[in-house]
Length: 253
Ligand code: 13P
Image (cartoon, rainbow, N blue to C red; front, side, top):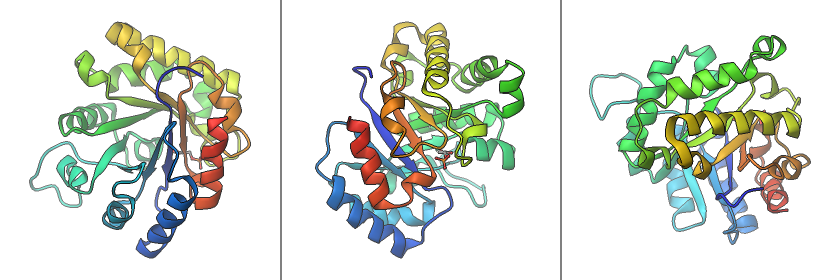
């Protein structure tokens, strides 16, 4: 636990139509709509943003997207610009999720451009980094993640870096039910913070670092108790409004 602002973000991935999103938002607000001790974020599919913008307006729950393109407008069929997201009242955007790196072949070069573009548009990027099982077993987990942080956050001013959120998501823990132990997650998040300190000095102390990978109601408290873990990026356990509300309450301790 640190004195940095804590964040619990749900990543719905490719789930929920507009009716489901509307019902979820109403129920979630009823359950946690008065919580201000930490920041709650729902990162929804693009198609649900308009409905959620209306439902979450003036609430304590922030809205985020799961991806975006790096230029303002143009001939980029199928892409969504940063301004389209701010127009939907998004304040956060996930960048470089491992599913996009692996399935859609997003490179660090593309991810770095997206981080910069998100910051230019006034969005807070949630940059995802994490090693796969081979890299962990070969003892290369920290080196992998350090490399990603260095390649994905080049040439940013301290003011820009202050608005970045980093999510450490070991690929072997995503959707597998296998969570990193809180000690391992702490070690990796501390390594990420020291990498950021190498780029940006003391600003690293201000950056929220989240853990993601099979986070549930039952393990959130233990993870949040670690010094360098400032919250969580939650996939499967964010899909049920009541369960996610309980997870948020457990995060409060
Ligand atoms: P799970 O919580 O389903 O393991 O997903 C983690 C994740 O990828 C969040 O971005």
